[in-house]
Image (cartoon, rainbow, N blue to C red):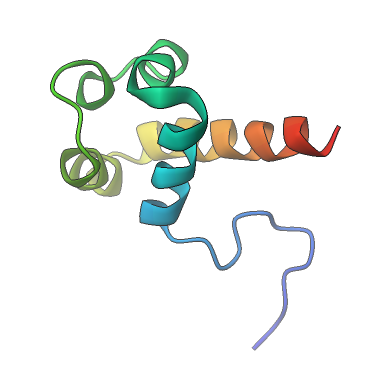
Length: 75
Protein backbone atom coordinates (compact mmCIF):
# COMPACT_ATOMS: atom_id res chain seq x y z
CA UNK A 1 0.00 0.00 0.00
CA UNK A 2 1.46 3.36 -0.99
CA UNK A 3 1.30 6.55 0.98
CA UNK A 4 0.01 9.80 -0.43
CA UNK A 5 1.70 12.56 1.60
CA UNK A 6 0.81 15.33 -0.87
CA UNK A 7 -2.86 14.39 -1.27
CA UNK A 8 -4.98 16.40 1.20
CA UNK A 9 -7.98 14.16 0.50
CA UNK A 10 -6.18 10.94 1.45
CA UNK A 11 -7.88 9.31 4.40
CA UNK A 12 -10.79 11.79 4.48
CA UNK A 13 -14.25 10.36 3.91
CA UNK A 14 -16.76 12.30 1.88
CA UNK A 15 -18.95 12.58 4.97
CA UNK A 16 -16.13 14.09 7.08
CA UNK A 17 -15.24 16.45 4.24
CA UNK A 18 -18.85 17.60 4.02
CA UNK A 19 -19.14 18.10 7.78
CA UNK A 20 -15.99 20.24 7.73
CA UNK A 21 -17.30 22.39 4.89
CA UNK A 22 -20.69 22.89 6.56
CA UNK A 23 -18.99 23.80 9.83
CA UNK A 24 -16.72 26.30 8.07
CA UNK A 25 -19.12 27.88 5.54
CA UNK A 26 -22.60 26.88 6.72
CA UNK A 27 -25.19 25.56 4.30
CA UNK A 28 -25.92 29.01 2.83
CA UNK A 29 -22.23 29.72 2.20
CA UNK A 30 -21.70 26.28 0.76
CA UNK A 31 -24.67 26.76 -1.56
CA UNK A 32 -23.21 30.07 -2.79
CA UNK A 33 -19.84 28.50 -3.51
CA UNK A 34 -21.13 25.29 -5.11
CA UNK A 35 -24.52 25.92 -6.67
CA UNK A 36 -26.24 22.57 -6.32
CA UNK A 37 -29.77 22.06 -5.10
CA UNK A 38 -28.88 19.71 -2.24
CA UNK A 39 -27.03 22.65 -0.61
CA UNK A 40 -29.66 25.31 -1.23
CA UNK A 41 -33.06 23.62 -0.76
CA UNK A 42 -33.66 21.71 2.49
CA UNK A 43 -29.99 20.74 2.86
CA UNK A 44 -28.91 17.72 4.84
CA UNK A 45 -25.78 15.62 5.09
CA UNK A 46 -27.65 12.50 3.95
CA UNK A 47 -29.15 14.05 0.79
CA UNK A 48 -25.86 15.75 -0.07
CA UNK A 49 -23.88 12.52 0.31
CA UNK A 50 -26.34 10.65 -1.89
CA UNK A 51 -26.11 13.30 -4.61
CA UNK A 52 -22.33 13.73 -4.44
CA UNK A 53 -21.70 9.98 -4.62
CA UNK A 54 -23.70 9.79 -7.87
CA UNK A 55 -22.49 13.02 -9.48
CA UNK A 56 -18.76 13.16 -10.25
CA UNK A 57 -18.68 16.80 -11.43
CA UNK A 58 -20.33 18.03 -8.22
CA UNK A 59 -18.09 15.89 -6.04
CA UNK A 60 -15.02 17.31 -7.82
CA UNK A 61 -16.21 20.87 -7.09
CA UNK A 62 -16.83 20.06 -3.42
CA UNK A 63 -13.44 18.36 -3.06
CA UNK A 64 -11.74 21.37 -4.71
CA UNK A 65 -13.52 23.71 -2.28
CA UNK A 66 -12.33 21.57 0.63
CA UNK A 67 -8.72 21.74 -0.58
CA UNK A 68 -9.05 25.53 -1.00
CA UNK A 69 -10.41 25.77 2.55
CA UNK A 70 -7.45 23.78 3.90
CA UNK A 71 -4.98 25.95 1.99
CA UNK A 72 -6.62 29.14 3.30
CA UNK A 73 -6.36 27.85 6.88
CA UNK A 74 -2.63 27.21 6.43
CA UNK A 75 -1.91 30.72 5.15
